[in-house]
Length: 319
Ligand SMILES: [Zn+2]
Image 1 (spheres, protein in one colour):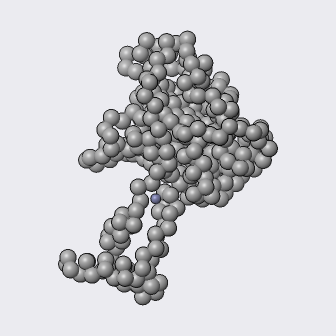
Image 2 (tube, helix red, strand yellow):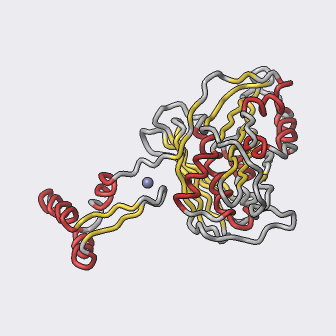
Image 3 (cartoon, helix red, strand yellow):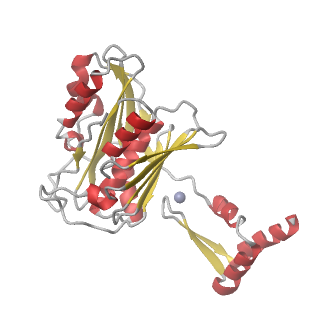
């Protein structure tokens, strides 16, 4: 079963934006509907996507592609129980954007990057950013579930469209066997991400199968998800409009969401300890130190010659 995917970046990014209220902090909410036959998770990720855009200097189309993947990973992570659990989402399509890599936790943290952040493509005839073309129609979506203990496990599906939402709902329906509908949106202008977010609706065991087509049809008709968020509407209000007549019950807890990368100079040193001693000596001789960039957040770590020498000394001592 194919899920609904509102692919609404909708706006010509060069258009002059109307004045908007400052974006509120990001958050995620959960609920049920249809007499507990469906599970609903929804997220606002505007500030996190804006931070990713700034950190990686993303083009318009790269912002929308990565922003959709970030929201999707947060929605998938919300299903995990263990407090350390994380979802890794990797999309490797044949388009010019290269790979999309996202990591999100059940704690509401998210980070991500794309291989080619600067690529831009012509708008579609409808005036939309062409995410499917940028990602590529052919390739794979890998979903890595890391529960915080034991081996993480990876599921892989072929891409359906490269539009991210379709691909994630296909993964859930075919690989996880959970009929699901996904709505992802990012809208932006030349100044900033105006709003980003997503909705995931899943059938719970024993639910009537035709329920998901009803939900898909409702979500596919949503045209103004992120524009409404940008105008200050809360997720709770929007879900009430779309699903309120289906006995929607939203949990009172609201999970704060933020861009966060746990990298540190200690972790960078830990990674350097995995290298061969000769490689470290070469860095010392040719560069007089090392510069390491965290791919996820683009932070630059500079290690002095002395720091590299002490790593080499530790290696020699432990051998
Ligand atoms: Zn980092």
